Image 1 (cartoon, rainbow, N blue to C red):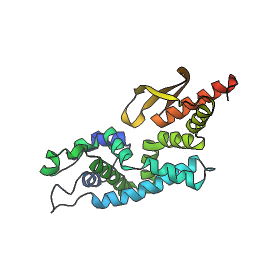
Image 2 (cartoon, rainbow, N blue to C red):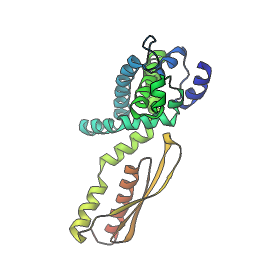
Image 3 (cartoon, rainbow, N blue to C red):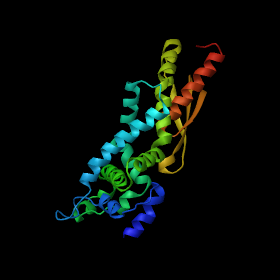
Image 4 (cartoon, one colour):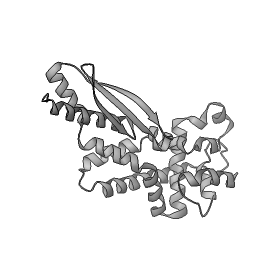
Length: 229
């Protein structure tokens, strides 16, 4: 099981374990057996490592951002839903060592178990290779989304467009997701928006929020060119 586990997960992180027992422990849920070590301590460690590495990533990439913006974006990137999605992207659920009860009740796809398992893997990487190894994995896994989050947060184009539309026409822009492609860890979204029934903007991003912000920015530029701002 250990070699199969390594072959499946290491290329996707990417990280190669020096001591593969760290990885095995990271995928061992407490439900497997009360007598066996489980991943709860690694989850605790991974949570702290992720917080530090994400802070480091955001500060390096956006040195001029305000503390409040950095905190908000970090929180948006490390919530349970995002971590569960990251876990699904590397098919972590398949490799979790669960007890029969959790197995029967769909534990392999439970958000809380997947998010905890993902944090445990980060904790295992920290134990195995140190902070720089863990930071490198966080950057590989979250770098694109971090850029999207910060770009969206720097200027709220959606709010500006909505205020304009309400002021001029008493209408709200309509956003439509027209395309979603790519693997879970590198999704590509395309959104279009209409104002008063007319297509005014099209945006691309690695999250729906980022795509909508890009579409709103394009719409504002187009409306400004028509003298309608």
